[in-house]
Image 1 (cartoon, rainbow, N blue to C red):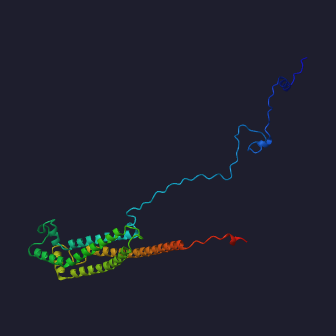
Image 2: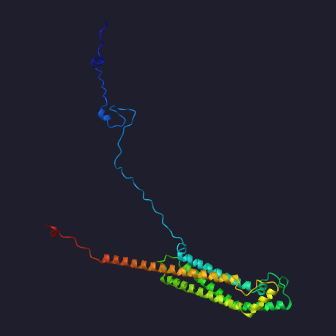
Image 3: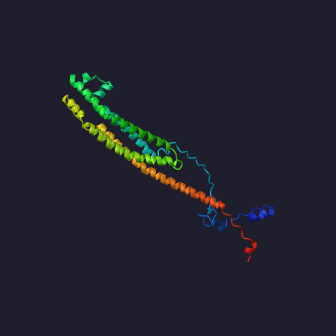
Length: 298
């Protein structure tokens, strides 16, 4: 019979071979890991609980781009837009006044333009043609004060409105108070003047069309088939009145907006003076002396 083999541990101790014993993972070490039931799982990475309050990340200070105002920033304000529209309507009034004169003067204006021959394009000959030329000349002279007055009036108000548009290319608080008051007075007078001017223009045109010269001229043209040359108020004259009233409304709106701007600028300057006064008073006040040691001791 063979002898029983000694245990390997006894042989190792005799030969001087000491190996460290394997330590089993304690259940306490694995108890805090999810998915482990008292044993160590080598396939899972170690689990670290997240911190309650993570440290804040550093925030970069991004430099802000400087905002540069455009040249038309203040021109395109409400006041500026109203004045620009008033300049355009003044131009339309000017164009319509000239067009009304060219349309209603008949053969005289056609001959002055030189676009066609009067004798070949009109069925007027002999004494009738001479009579129509004389009547056209008289009628044009009678309407002359209306056209010259309309051109001068609309051109003057249009140019002054454009000057106020250019002068208003500044912030309201930097604009001179005289300019703002001047714009207010000008627009108030312009609105009233346009209403009166439209009434006078229509009254003047109706009066000219009611004369015997206009009636004879109308009969001569109608006898030869030209019924469009009548003594009624023409479409061009009606357009003058229409654009004139629109301009008066624009000036009225401009008065309201300018008055509001003046009020805001006045309030701004009052607030600025009040702040400067508070600063000066704060600098002039003596600083209170600190309490002494003996006064604070009990």
